[in-house]
Image (cartoon, rainbow, N blue to C red):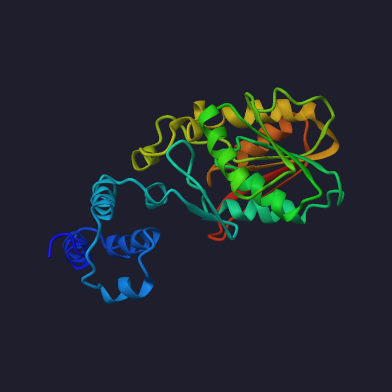
Length: 274
């Protein structure tokens, strides 16, 4: 029957012949409509309201246009938390959780450490750090006012009080010798990179930087001024950029520069000390 859950499951199965994960993602979406897991599992002949039917039709339209599921659901999981996301910010990537874990292992003072994230996006990195280290003082900047709006939504959602959001071009606002740690997952894709064809729904300004490296140069230069002596900076970068990012830090005068990999064994992070 048109308008029933069973009708839409039939539609999903027909469409899934061209997309192997559509049916799985459709079930995730139904859960977001507060339809019980039992009804979903049974593919029950539940009669849906007009509002529910419209939401399901919108799901199919967006999904078939390639809109990522996280944007459709308006949520994304990161570091055991569920963040609000939409097309104003990048979808958090699993490998970035490793950078949060690395930061939490650094020997910062236990109370009052001042940590700055450059390019906050959804706020998933800073908020995860703030929740894990409530005694730290976190600052997070972004040049995108739209990204800051999303970060503010998540700040309120998690009731975080030790994190301040700032509208800024990188860390140009920071006072000299004031920060103990800088964390950044900046734009690092070259404008001509073919990977961009699969990322058309995500904000281009959060993905692309001239030459694929300029964001690192600009942040590193400002970081050398803002960091205290002995302060550190950690970057996430593209898996082919380790040598370039390490060279950028060396040129700016950083020392004790090290690199680390993600769970796939790909080069992903670089850490330097002032």
